[in-house]
Length: 325
Length: 155
Image (cartoon, rainbow over all chains, first blue to last red; front, side, top):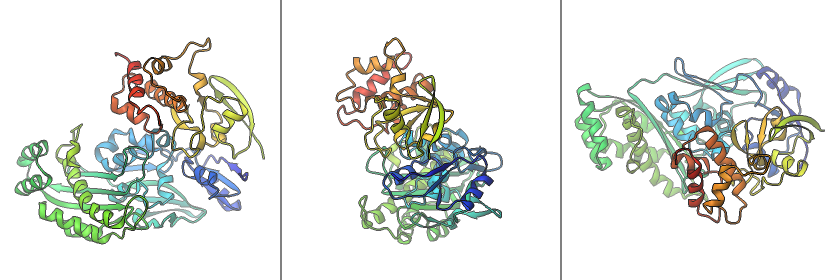
């Protein structure tokens, strides 16, 4: 293996100016992707600039929405009760990324900057409407995460820019979110497909307890949806994000706009699944074929949506029956 | 270009001259001769190289050696007490028959130790979660999970 210089800046400014002055330099955060690529000789930079020792890159701030520093490890996010309750989709992703050993080291910023179409945290962050704060030599700028990805491994970041944090809005009690990672095995697998949804619903107060009862039954999803329709559960706002269905993590914007403002029903969910599947452009790969992915989007979008609604109606449920999703 | 770093290795302060391309695993095995930590895949997939850094289980095969500076590293060699008495986890693995070929065992013990150090009485799901990054091709995991359970408090 070719040797390289290794720099350990202590501040963001120092890291950025190092990137400007060094020739052929690359950032390394947790290193769980970069180290593998170095070993496989796919990266042979002369200088590595480590982000691990920078103060003020690893933090979770839950005042007024949510701010997560890009250097925060997946495990730290996973253990945060506030995120699990109000930004559940993110916990769904961080709890199933890699293994415990990887989650202890890998950072959320690294997962996003690596820009893999299968990046686990990308779908939840898109569905939770995250903004990325990027710091460069001329100050910082904020961009929506949807504009951040350009293609596999490609982002809008220039060499001398650094992703500092993710900012998400405050979500109330009537908003729920979920991420479903479709894999062959339970641990240490990349998704065949990933779907994240966030939904804000409104329903008449007196109907809540009846809705709770519905989710406790062993009825089919379509029957539960029919009864949610009878109770007048309305979708006020929704975001749907899909991974591994295009060169970059994407949103199903047509499906979102069709769903907004409608009363939840079995037919609506069927329609939303079909529209979302139509928006995706999956391809054949070793993990799954395109037709299979298209079919599964229809299923998973529905499951993720109903799981999100369940989380609004039964926020304190510790155990969600596996059969529903 | 060589760098000199110091860190705590199994409670002893060590200073060592390293090349930045070295991983923690390479340094443990080739410089310190601590060959209990195994190299399986070398890409962070199998967990045979698991060590504990500041209380957290980490794959040492993809951990840059320069990031270890000032940290506390525990390897399988630091799990038993100095007089050679085995750690309760090690005894449990022997008693429950949780070892066959033994190649995954050091990594399994380190992952399990990190879990039990943080949580005395984990559930079966938490145990599975903690060792999900450790591949074992012999045992089918049942006896390994039994062994970890037998050590957790109150059983």
